[in-house]
Amino acid sequence: MNSITVSQKMSYNNIRLIQGVLRMIYKELGRTGEKIPALGLGTWGIGGFETPDYSKDEEMVELLKTAIKMGYTHIDTAEYYGGGHTEELIGRAIKEFKREDLFIVSKVWPTHLRRDDLLRSLENTLKRLDTDYVDLYLIHWPNPEVPLEETLSAMAEGVRQGLIRYIGVSNFDRRLLEEAINKSEEPIVCDQVKYNIEDREPEKDGLLEFCQKNGITLVAYSPLRRTLLSEKVKTALENVAKNHNATVFQIMLAWLLAKPGVVAIPKAGRVEHLRENLEATKINLTEEEVKLLDSLA
Ligand SMILES: NC(=O)c1ccc[n+]([C@@H]2O[C@H](COP(=O)([O-])OP(=O)(O)OC[C@H]3O[C@@H](n4cnc5c(N)ncnc54)[C@H](OP(=O)(O)O)[C@@H]3O)[C@@H](O)[C@H]2O)c1
Image (tube, rainbow, N blue to C red; front, side, top):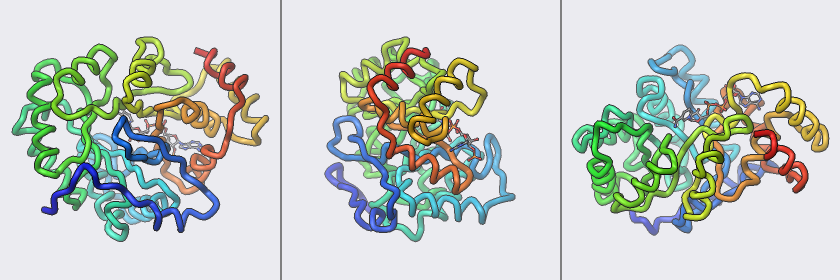
């Protein structure tokens, strides 16, 4: 396996050339000095949810390749997704791209947080992705039955072995994130949590503010919420959307991207959605619009 160094920087030049008029925007990951696409590609459901779905493999590989060509070079996945099959499909899709142009995130499931289990999970993830390293490796959910020190130290081992570039957590509340930061040998660069126009827990428990003050990237999952919006929120979004000749979904993303230190990872299973979401990066909400959307909590 080739080892990698922390100073390795991604060159997005080739990808940028094929993006055309649709421009991805970039934000710094934690305090690493490295910029990553502020819109990542969610993959929960590509190749299955809890179990593998092999029925649309060719279509999904093509979709992933199209997404990468459009600028979705930041790809979010997990060993859990599709029972591992999602990682296999990503592995097939990334073959024709330069590995250093991609930023691949995967996550270890909470039943695999003991040292040996984690290192085995990591090895299996790398095999399925058919790559030598992941750019970012996250604890998918906390598990109070496994000492956090043990998990974090196994992740640091993965970094030392050149198998992981950066580490982070997911679904950690503010208190647990602070605990992880204090116990980790390697910097924790992000916390991936549910955050969207209706689900405001990261604001309520002070997680967002903590992340912004301490240079931890907040990765917003389910940014489009998947489930129905309340009437009040829907109406407000529709009004703002009219001002920008945009869709409600684009405004949901633009609102998140307007926040310092926040990136979002919408899942899109169709090219129209990929394009629409990417176009949201061009929307500049006014201060008043942001205030209005903020106040919907
Ligand atoms: N860390 C965690 O515990 C955790 C938990 C949940 C999710 N995640 C990650 O976050 C990603 C995103 O979250 P999510 O998948 O729960 O939900 P989401 O991205 O908020 O919503 C995905 C849904 O929105 C639809 N959609 C996408 N773009 C659209 C558009 N422009 N207009 C209308 N509908 C659109 C998709 O439909 P189509 O598929 O038809 O395009 C899909 O049904 C996941 O895929 C996963 O990578 C992490």
